[in-house]
Image 1 (cartoon, one colour):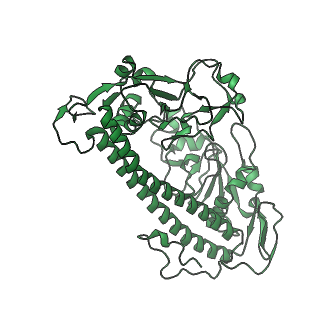
Image 2 (tube, rainbow, N blue to C red):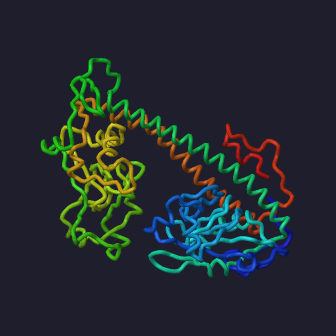
Image 3 (cartoon, rainbow, N blue to C red):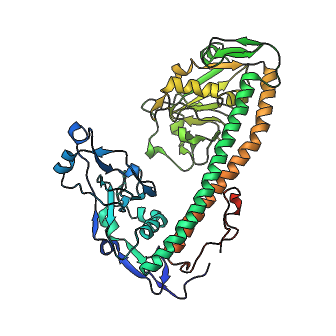
Length: 467
């Protein structure tokens, strides 16, 4: 795409140059109304029960338009809190702190907010959607201006002091039209890919379930069971349990250290023994590159949680049910947190077969039942895990199942990985395109969409007629 004829320094390091006729304005001068709200006392039912006044929290902000919110307050709450103001529909909201810091939204309804939302309204100089795109493009730069350690805060004063380069209002409208069109294309592509990923995951899950429950090409009679998860199995297969396999010394099971010696943030080092959290067990792998590390002298003081190559890792706290196979690579062992259980397979099972079985719906549905059914504070301890039922084919069939699933899922996993990478690239492209447009790096004032630029049936055509 073409650039503007001439540029000038913006005076803001992270903005770089801007077109010659663009002007830099502080947010405090762009908007007539800048403010935030407050939170009525949570324990007072008079402030919330049967509330009718929309009360937006930062959790409602979605980097887009919002047409409703999750909380409402009463007229009494509104009347007794002078900090609460009704913002008109079309107000731009910015999250100032918390987990959603930097998130934004434009309201489609009149509402008040809590104290973590900064509201920007009433401007004749800047198009609301143009400002919205500017905040999207510069989120990282804005958040980097925050202060505070445990909970970074960008505050109203920081937002008021932000300098935004703007062009004539009619040119802003042109930029917004361009970005609305382009981001809709990109979002459609991403949505399409996400649906394809979900279908591939369903296919993957179906392949695993069929192999784990029925074996490969088994046509003989089956045993029937009075079990809510396993109704029948091929002959000569057994339905066992984690407890039974531990008692038979086929399994060893342990999680991380719970005591006073549990490592803390100040113990972490750049080079040391991997200290694996639940978040490090993902996509059926154990991430020993980005996980925390602790000195060997601290690791050796811990009594439990020493995991070795070949162990199956299962997350049992927080996000329950993530599975991975431990490969310690150059490390003699890794240390687990109390969020992760290792299963060390000693005999009668192939470790890789247990790895696949732990991914089956038969197993994950048991986890849901024992851990609380999918709440955000799920937990299933070592003792409770011993009630989990295990399907036990002969070793010869375990070998066949492992080989089959290794081959069959590889193609699906490669496709999923490919599509996820495409999504990441398109998200990066989306942010880059927005940034270039709202900072004047590209000139889209005369842009018009091509007649046939995008087909949702063939999303790979997205960039064919870009310019």
